[in-house]
Length: 292
Ligand code: AMP
Image 1 (cartoon, helix red, strand yellow):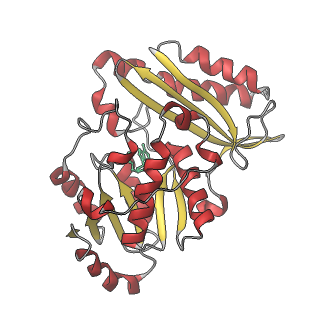
Image 2 (tube, helix red, strand yellow):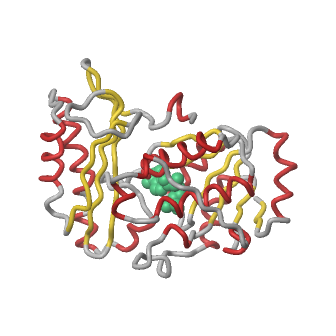
Image 3 (cartoon, rainbow, N blue to C red):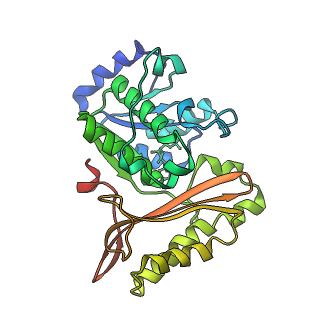
């Protein structure tokens, strides 16, 4: 496992390109089992490069950029057994230099986290575009946990015609269902206990769907009820994955997404479901097993 820091160091990746499609897993570090599952998934596709970079551009002025956990040594220890080919841990200047890497997010950035966190997706696209230019992978793997982010990135890749396949990988959860997140480290004991309400909301929506409920307004209200233990609900959203519209009756590939606050911590979670007359099943976000 090579540790790469600079643009010059990235030349070492060229030797790997003959071994299969170079497969990239961008992260902000503070790795947990969710990140590691992406690295494992990536490893089934080709030689893996993991990046660790806390991207200042995707944090709002009142958000947690300064306090976001930074623990590269521990991250490297966790990655060791998975043996990715390389870890790219650049500084801010290596990523951005003087470049103005602004990409306007498309329609999938509307609503949900795009509304709650102004400038967030522009910041995500800036870093993803820069990292894709620097690493030049053939495949990039993102977590379905950040579903809207996956869609916004896949849209950018399509619009700019970037030569990379975008793959989404399933959400890894704690035994009680809480989606793993680096921000779970902020949760005190009481907040951690209540945090399960996000998963509960998604589960209850799923049960209602399994029982045949298709009215979006009913499903939203089931989810809102389950989120009562949270201190605030940022959103409860149902969106058609293919065109980002808000359905009146749910059908086809749907994103059910929630964002809520527990004390000072904001958490998100979602389910991606294929809803047909014959039933409901979990599915991937991007087409053809995640190929954008
Ligand atoms: P982050 O370090 O939070 O920017 O996340 C890096 C990548 O890991 C993103 O593609 C996330 O969607 C993904 N990720 C974060 N949490 C999970 C999880 N619980 N399960 C699967 N992937 C995740």
